[in-house]
Structures are given as structure tokens and as C-alpha cells.
Amino acid sequence: MEEAIAPVLAARGIRLVVRDVREDRELLRRYRHEIPVLLEGDVELARHRVTPEDLVARLAALGGPSA
Image (cartoon, rainbow, N blue to C red; front, side):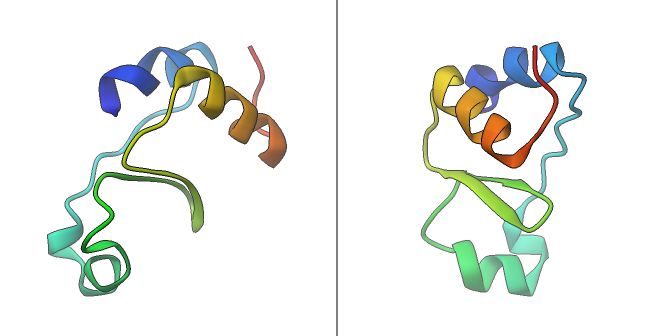
């Protein structure tokens, strides 16, 4: 997922922070079988896979930075 979304995030000045859910009990409880997961704060943007086009749409729906 990281390779697919990196250009979208970079174009919008958004920094990706990669976390290992196994290091956080709550994240592990919520996402044990849903890795990878993409969050913006507490808002879930995607599980498993997301296309760049879908990510652009989801960020726009949040009112995030546009290209």
C-alpha cells in the first residue's frame, strides 16, 4: 500500500507515518486481521489496498489538501 499512496501524499504535503499495530494493544485489537490499514488521525481511509484515485477521493471527502 505504501508505494501506491506515497505519490498522492507527497503531492499534497502529507507525511506518512508507518506504525506497527503489534506495538499498540488498541490498534492490534481493532486491526489484527485488517493489515495494512490507512488512518488519518482516527478516521479509517482504507484497509488492505487502496488505489491512488480512491485515496484522492477519500482525502477530498475529508476536506484534505488537494493537488
